[in-house]
Amino acid sequence: MGYEILGLPLIYYFAMIAKVLVAFVFVLLTVAYATYAERKIIGHMQVRLGPMRTGWHGLLQPIADGVKLFFKEEIIPSEASKFAFLLAPLVALMTAFISFAVIPFGGTVTILGYQIPLQIAGYYDTKLNQFFDVNVGVLYILGMASLGVYGIVLAGWSSNSKYSLLGGLRSSAQMISYELAAGLAIVSVFMMSGTLSLQKIVENQAGFHWYAFSSPVGFVAFVIFFICSLAEINRTPFDLPEAETELVSGFCTEYSSMKYAMFFMAEYANMVTVCAVTTTLFLGGWHGPFLPGWLWFIIKVYFLIFCCMWIRATYPRYRYDQLMRLGWKVFLPITLLNVVATGIWIMVVG
Amino acid sequence: MILPLLQGLKITLSHLFKKPVTLQYPDERPVVAPNYRGLHTLKVSHDKAKCVACYLCPTVCPAKCITVEAGEDANHDKYAAVYEIDMLRCIFCGYCVEACPVDALGMTQGFELAAYKRSDCVYKKETLLEKK
Image (cartoon, rainbow over all chains, first blue to last red; front, side, top):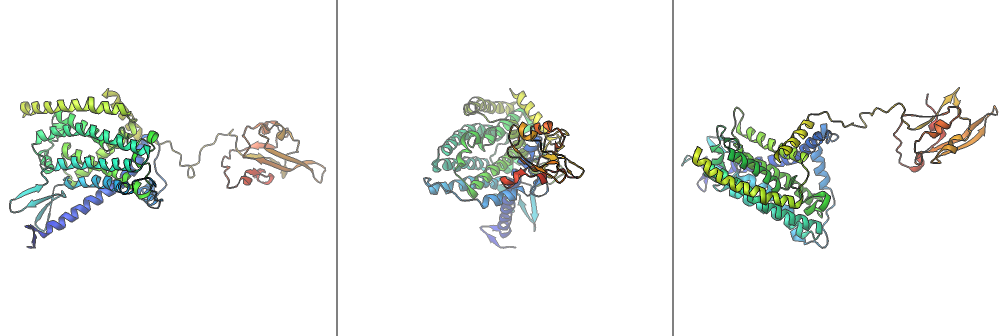
């Protein structure tokens, strides 16, 4: 037990690997069944049934879809830039998963007398009696989200197809426009919490002091951040980069087989990540009464994922100029004002 | 501006709890109307087809899908030696049923007429005969 690497007990490293595996498997399973849930929920909202034939009530549908995509023919356009073409789905998928490293998905568990915080990039220092995690966690998430754009832009550029290129360009313009508003919405949270560490932000929200509902400025920030996140991960009503009707699914037009599946997974993994980030920043993370922390975290994330699907079933797609107008002329001024309002709120209310 | 958006969300949410209208077709059967014009049938009386091969049905048929050839049986009665309907050409208008003077032709509620071969879609007399 006394064995140490770099001043930390060995069990911390095992715990780290275990946490990575648990989080990874959790996200993968959620991604697989989010596709199923989406089809089911949208189906029922359109008074249909959704998938019913593969397994009981279509429960094996994600597996059937995966097997189908796996056995499809691999097609690489002869004029495509091969390296970038192969790199793009990897970039998209990796950046979607990697953000989960800093999200605290539960309280602490005690194993063999050691306290293990349920956050991949976090540990408990017994000598200093203090929790440590990445102290710029939110910046890290924003950075990874921006990197995800590269996957889509590269895919659009390297495919050598006009539809893909248009999709890629649209996505970069859209993400840049909405990242600003999303970033400014988070600024309100920073002002209230005074830290960039996700663990501390969650700690500050303990006891139902959720930032989304403890102040009107927090609520505005929450709503705008969630909407901007939808735009950043290319979900309806902002799914212009893939717009089936105009761009024949945009940046992934030329992709087939597993490479297409990776884009598909990246899209859903992004949705899970964004919902997890929103939960952490605005909905009190894993805090909640009666139930264990990790369960509260899952409930909140799944509720937000349901909201994403609900929104998809309700609204049609924005037009490109409407999208830009909404981003630059509506959300950006509101979030800027919200930052000022947050300052006043903190000064007046405390 | 925000209120209509929320109303939209309310509508979709209310639909989530409605009973789906989907018919699980091969397992659940649709209710076919009694006067549905489906697959034709040659009516049978005293163990033989009522058809007297008068040629009124192929004459009236707008799609020209009925082939009749008359024959003479042991009692010197005229009967349809060949009676074929090409279901690929038939438009299920029901004129043939209306034209029949001896009420020998009818239409059933059968609507599953798919086949693997085009030749299977030409229904012979034996398959058209009413099953008792």
